[in-house]
View 1 (cartoon, protein in one colour):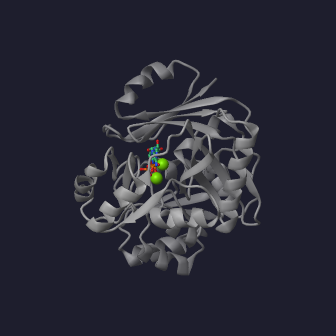
View 2 (cartoon, rainbow, N blue to C red; view 1 turned 90 degrees about the vertical axis):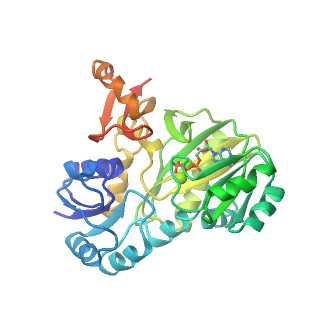
View 3 (tube, rainbow, N blue to C red; view 1 turned 120 degrees about the vertical axis):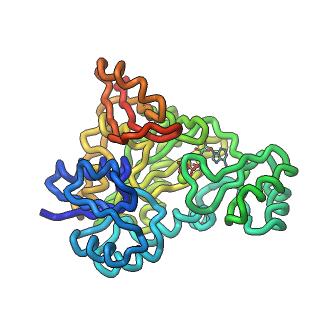
Length: 346
Ligand code: ATP
Ligand code: MG
Ligand code: MG
């Protein structure tokens, strides 16, 4: 049978491998870290660094197509892999979403609204940005940030000097603080023939920069839903995208503002595992494998809650209920670490 190569062996890679397996496809995980969550369910695992060119070549040659569970794949690794097998979603989606500045320029270029922003690469630019963007605002590292890491909130322009120091010279953007009423996301999929499908929008609540819960349906007007689906389609089409993408949105009185895009399956799409016949993981595998998309319509209302760190203490009680538990098989509980999630039918 065909084999899907997956870069990254975390929980997203694990759930992609489970979905692929159900479709009769094999998976081969490439992961630098030892004992990855996806390793328990994949058919093959390569433990090697992204600097190991020979390992990358062997991995690519052993699979039919390559996808990934995280967007921070080094360019040098992509250069090697791309020569051997197709990578979906493609290079441009990766390059754009790896850098908050290029992401914002791309979205603005499509005519979409983003938070006011300024590029910050020097102390002088930092001071200028604090003046032009004003406060409250958030200084965010352009690369490698996730779960709110690499972000510093400014209450006053005088906070900038210290914030920029803390960034240790990392290229950053200063973002104006958006006074949103709530946050929602679109989980959108595009097949290789250009077919696009979006899941119902989920309403997201973050705690300390980490996604805490997603609730479907989200509280949105029909017009807002239409806007969200259209802008997601616009983004996917502009990138000639193949696979699932998460589009995070701020809902404001002046319309939808795009926070960021993730060129992969997304935590805020985990509700689809118990709210739809075809979940985001199967949808992604279908797209990447060149299959038609499945029917992602929602058959149930769901509230997804992440189990982070000590939330694992809830598991014995949750086991006794009808809630759908999804545990990632991580041996070590750490504060802030995503250990699993649970889908409640509401
Ligand atoms: P992820 O794990 O989703 O990739 P991240 O580290 O990339 O997270 P962001 O999505 O940029 O972080 O920000 C995390 C959260 O912080 C947002 O979901 C939102 O709640 C809040 N936030 C970020 N930017 C802004 C902004 N400009 N205005 C108001 N709130 C913001
Ligand atoms: Mg992010
Ligand atoms: Mg985010």
